Length: 157
Image 1: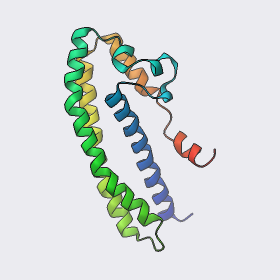
Image 2: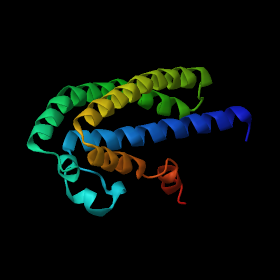
Image 3: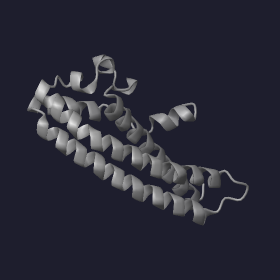
Image 4: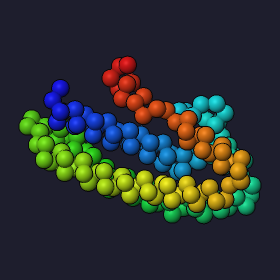
């Protein structure tokens, strides 16, 4: 495969990985439930229940979530049309690498902002958790499916 083709495949893989991670994070925060990728009893409990938050912590958690979820949803609304445009261009009769790269760059910029927002949210959440709850949340995030898993399933591996 030519170098430019490999770069395109790697860029698409990165975008897909970021999309999957973002979608999992969005679901956790929006629904308060952990998707099946986490396994164990975490799939049967809401995140506040899983972390065993006190009533005061739950109140703080809810306050933090409200604006974050709205902003995260807005981020996805901004990313979605660029992602669709890039995919359509890739699979068009005559893909224009300049257009593909332009859309990829916009998506990367939007996702960088989104990732920063998630990091800031996690830091705020960390501040209301005790040490054991912090460890539980960190372990939960670490146990997420490896980045290549979705692509492997998509391609029958």
